[in-house]
Amino acid sequence: MLEAYALTKRFIKQQIDLGFDQLYLSEKPESSSTPSPSRELDNFYQSIKNCRECHLHKNRTNLVFGMGNPQANLMFVGEAPGREEDLQGKPFVGRAGQLLDKILAAIDFKREEVYIGNILKCRPPENRDPLPEEVDKCEPYLLKQIEIIKPRIICALGRISAQVLLKTKLPLNQLRGKFHDYHGIKFLVTYHPAALLRYPQYKRQTWEDVQLLRKEYDKLLLS
Image (cartoon, rainbow, N blue to C red):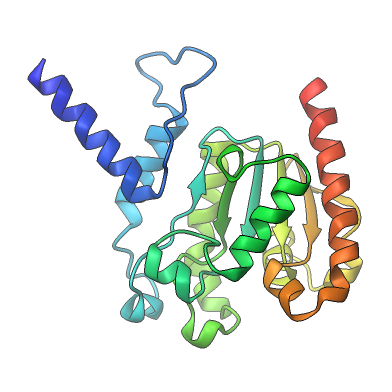
């Protein structure tokens, strides 16, 4: 009994470290030999939380792993952590994150229902664009998260995350407004919330994109 209590306490602490404020139970029973997505993410986080694969670790406060529902059907992928994210160790918690929460609410989603991550896990200096060598080192971490979570739709927030995952140099205005195929996963591109704070004129296109996202999400759930 004491051993079970200790394991449960350790697991809850790890969830808090990961930024989860709720525990999710699988709708389907898991076999004892198959770890749950939550446990897999936790184990993966533990394996990379002290990553030193590139120079960005030298100035980080926290590695920003990602957060949300480990069994989410919908996953959002941004570019990299900013100042607030680096301080708190959680993605999208600054002004852009507050706007993302409003966008989610407008299409009847809560942050806890989806999963949110970034291409990079550490903040680039002065929030500059990620360098190719940084992406090369960090993208495999995101790919592992996608493999564990198995989302049915991915929404790329901004040009960089879209170009990295789709392996293209097309500009954002040619990528948004339609679904792409990402290894069998529906993939939509829209503006990064930080861009909307600087250029409010893009909010109309973003609203069109997220309405399209909601419509496709509902259709997939019925299929």
